Image (cartoon, rainbow, N blue to C red; front, top):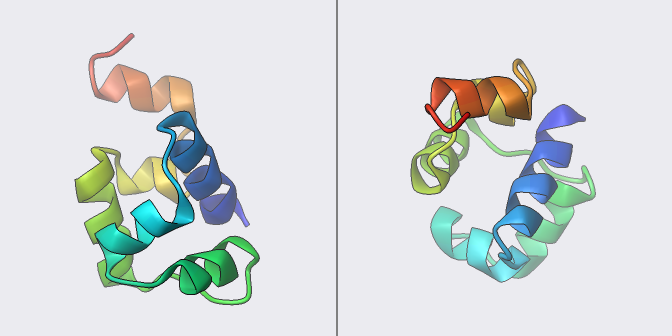
Length: 77
């Protein structure tokens, strides 16, 4: 699932732990672990909160655009 791959990628790029993501989403580490193992899913409110906190677009998180396109949208290229 693309959202899971992008969540892990973003988390690792920013040197964040599952606990750090859990704090953003008000979930515990075990729930983030389940999400990353595709045993649970993020709901739309959690996706919005994560995108806002991480300064990323939902298009990127959902896999609708790639990292290069995300950088261009943010003016980082």
